[in-house]
Image (cartoon, rainbow, N blue to C red; front, side):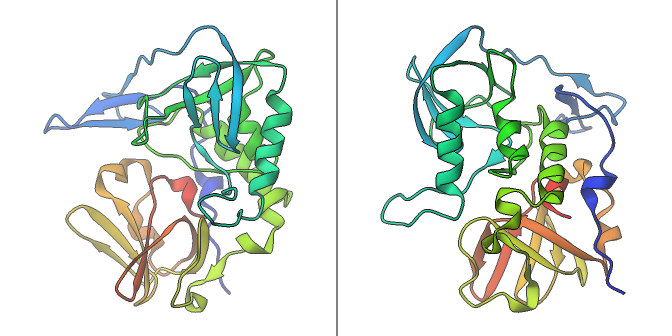
Length: 268
């Protein structure tokens, strides 16, 4: 009988918006959303005070505030809208329209995390309404976004993962769309798959390398986990021989596809 491991149900049960930091023997900083490490200390993160009007909504996870800040919503990813000659991904317009309707005529409060900006210069953050509704989490709960946790930005991880689990169980939004159904690893085409993708298959080998640990599914596909992120995961050797699902974006090198897994919530 095939067993599907559900990692989301085995994540430790803690409810925290805190981020913790500790240093290893070489002085390298590590981050977590829980205090499993005895030396971990709560990281003080300054958050933006006051409220803003939203000047524009670019897509389901990007807005511009009235002070000119372009905000990329942290911890989530919504399907793409039409841009640069590409058609909209399934669900992209729905996410954008929901965000426009939710934020019109209201104000939002901004909370940042460990990393303040991304490589595009956008401010990374969580938005809250005047009624303290967490916009990032509401998008996930409605099935309009998937949880996309990128360490060291770990605030509200538990809230986002729980919201995704409930939306997925209820088959809301993207979770009932055929475009986002899991692809068996042996059915992955030579062209791969555009955008955010779900791949399912049996882990045949756990292969440690210099910077990554590779979960080898086949000669054509692997999932890779950065060694710096291993403290967030259970023992990777426990995946050997198990059928699991991984979620993310495919990278191709030659005839092989790889998917970077940054957090345990990106697999099931």
